[in-house]
Length: 136
Image (cartoon, rainbow, N blue to C red; front, side):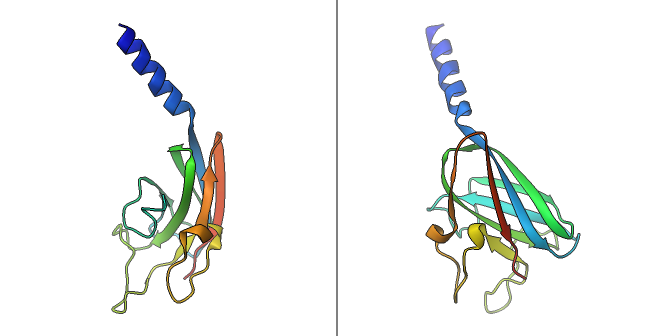
């Protein structure tokens, strides 16, 4: 019985430190497909699978993507407009993105992807808000 109470206390303590992250993705050009957002640790950044993901139906203008129960920590957000609904960031024969993409803090892409440090932000508290613009 003590084990059960101790486990319940540990689980509820971990949940208390989780945040909601609201990502405002600006510059969406149409209502085709979805806007996909991934919150990535430094080790996951620029990789296809990050632990925390969300999506919302696309519409012209700004799309809000909410990701629940994100543990406190440092992350970078990466997003793309999946217009053709295939769940992948499509690329041309040179490997350059064919669909719009963007990174938190509008991290610069100079002859390649941005650095984690340029896109990083801290998650903590009840709600963390991040905004950035897609690049087509």
